[in-house]
Image 1 (cartoon, each protein chain N blue to C red):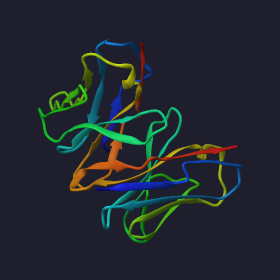
Image 2 (cartoon, one colour):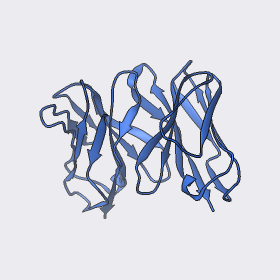
Image 3 (spheres, rainbow over the protein chains, first blue to last red):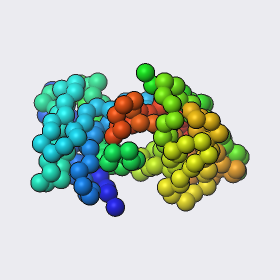
Length: 111
Length: 113
């Protein structure tokens, strides 16, 4: 079945560092890909998405590109802030189907 | 716009006690509804989903059950809680007009002692 694998955390970076969180997937067909973010004590929020190959999703300085050839959707940000500290989930879904999440990566940003 | 309410926000229960968590949705009709659990070190696990009143699909065998008595109400229950039921429970529905995406409620943190 479909699955999502993302890098284990926690990831600890200094403020203004470059961030990459790796995500790869296994799926039939052409799923949509997502990054969700969970800030401390809160539910999940959609951070960005891409619905077809080579699409780039972006939001709040974060970017991820749908790479069909490598089945990847890595999350990047050029300069992280303390407020980016959260848990990040990579996910995929097919139309009208449930979402399949990765296990999440906890990110700590040090001032 | 959509709103998901979850009640209660936090709960501490002894082992063996019953459980009832409620999720209600506003701003959409006849939505698919989902219950997820987030346990420490285990990511986000889909527990149940429902495509309509009285229709429940279970994703994993467990100590929990779900019911959908009304179109916009989804309830997660247990007759006897286990320690392993501790976690953060999230209710979700498809984002309005966007069949691929899901919109999440604020969650209920359950601690079983």
